[in-house]
Amino acid sequence: MASVKQEDCSQTLGNVIKDEKEENTGVAANHAESPEAQTCISGAQHQEDHKNQQPHHCPLCMKSFKSMTTLKRHMPWHTKDRSYSCGDCGKRFKTSNALTTHLRVHTGEKPYVCSDCGMSFSQDGTLKGHQKIHTGVRPYCCSDCKMAFSRRGTLNNHRKIHTGEKPYHCSDCKKDFSRLGTLRIHQKIHSGEKPYHCTDCIKCFITSAELTVHQRVHTGEKPYHCAVCGRSFSRLDTLRSHQKIHTK
Image 1 (cartoon, rainbow, N blue to C red):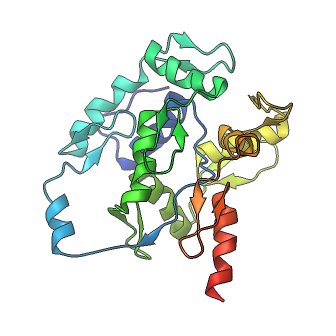
Image 2 (image 1 turned 90 degrees about the vertical axis):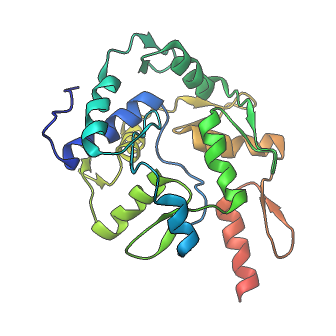
């Protein structure tokens, strides 16, 4: 992958960030059960909390910078060779720690446990993002519809609903997608690839998120709770469908 040119604008940097994020994490970007967005909370306290933050963030290592120029100088570090290869799927990583984290996708190991609901995760960063569901902190607000999100990346993906941007194209069926991760998942439909295997039964899945949801059939885990009647569900979409009963 070509390095980021110093004089390039945000469009080039954005493409590099998208591609690098998908390749560096080795995890599909299509999160099947992202937290439900809520209305943006504005006010003096919110502005005070964020006015001194460094506004330019690297999504690959979470470092923050005061200027876009400094961020662009930092980005080429992420384009270095990846010498650590996964024997299961072939994805490559720059460090042994990154490979170790990725291998949990295949082994199903989830050592990071949420103390509020008991859900477990393969990465510490994913757990921290999940915990914002319980705290209710959603600092990233959409300027078009005022929806708020707990993660910057979720907001960036949401904005494409308003812009209609779909820069990623499937060469097999010509469908267009707003996210590179969604395209990669879609392409597995054509290839027939289902790399995520359930250790309890013979079922296989295209994404790790689908496998995670399926495994609750065996574990009996029901992490989604109705605040009105207390019923619990194994899937977020099932909870949302149930909640409509109370709004009628």
